[in-house]
Image (cartoon, rainbow, N blue to C red):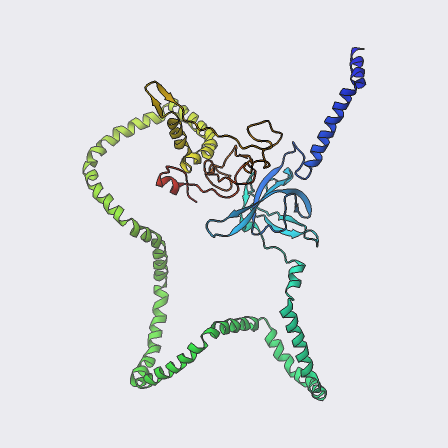
Length: 480
């Protein structure tokens, strides 16, 4: 009775019914607003891909595999390649968990979905046994060139091309006009010509003839020779002078060289098979020695210094050698101790547990020097004082005025209005050159202030990996 009475009282309350109705409407509006970005609380497989050109793509475009929608493009950001100086786009994809993991030999291509310019990203799954993990980046080499669009084909027939086609048709018509009898005679002679031409064309079209390679080679040779035609003409003139000079020594010197060539070739024919293995092994040996010799030339001064420093060490080595035997026995007893074995096993487990965290956190110091800067700033915060004590160094900023200002109550992040500088800039998780972060940068403390726009999260662009008071070795060790 009590439960029924409570339910009846709730249903009879207009305030409660209205509150539930408003809550349902808010949830429905929230789901509809975020429909393109995927439903909340649904797990997804997130990866990023690099493409040479993202023209026509917008966040929310589909990602397909085999024509089936498997996700969507979450965001599109430009990226600058510091090595080549070229720009490309990075697409953040939100895919279904069924796709995970994508094989490492997968490729992708931007395709047109309609003639109106709508596009989508198609992924061709590979067959590799290894795949990309959550948050991985598919390199630019996985992207294939964009397909040729119909407007690109039609754009080849521009005004100059159309005028040239018209001129060709006019000239072809002038060439044929008034030559009817000659064309008839030519057609009458064609059967005999074709009968003789048939075996010739069979020989030319045979793959064994290699006519295609011959034509390609002739074309390439002509293209190479054309820019130096004048130099070649001059070369023939100089060859005439050279051959004139050779004619004076043709007998007996050149004649004797030619007559002695066959016996020389016979000796070489008998000798070369014998020394060929030696030459092959020598070539392989010198090929393997080349990297070492190249490095040896650069490290020769260091090796010389090491040899000079090693002479005193070698003189003291007999004393060291006498201590090696008891040291080795002590190490053996240490190795055989059960407690040591157990401790090493626990140490290995500890390293395995903390290894991933250390690899993620270590670049914050080894690349960005953030640990040193933190302690320096903490020490600097109370570096000023007097005989009565220390005080903390602070600076007070007055927030800009306007809607949703940081100094007053707000319903949304500040995004302009009122004061021209009323924009919120907040980056709770800056990039610190950790594995998997893209771009690889020391963002904390290096973010540029984007004037006239709201920036929440990572600042667009690459802020570099240079911070204050870095040692030279840090930048080289963490460099790209």
